[in-house]
Image (cartoon, rainbow, N blue to C red; front, side, top):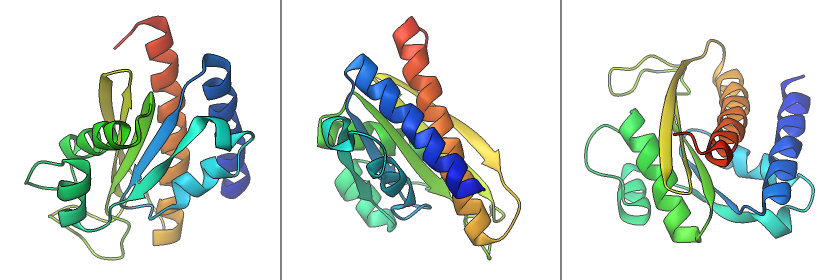
Length: 162
């Protein structure tokens, strides 16, 4: 059911990006490519999807995406990842995932702690989630949340909201 939900959400992102002539980029840590894969399967992805960066290692987040030193399971990291991938891939909108999939804790955070960050035309934001379930369930829930948050951020930017 979640895979179907994520495919439907990706289609909504595709329509939104196409209707508004936006390009989209993705920065992933926790989701390891699942998010960009969902978007890449949506309609006309070759027109609006710029690509994605899977930055699993902290050093890659810092070197490639410009993330500041410090905890990577954080709102700051998610926002910097989104802004960094937007700049690297010359995108109008970007979304990023970072967090703890499990089964073990990281940086003092329990499994299921997830931060989604977004950047749309310079407007940045993030949201904290606490998902339950297996690592696979946490990843699927994270993809759904990231797609939903990206849609919300694109809508807010269109309305001129922060």
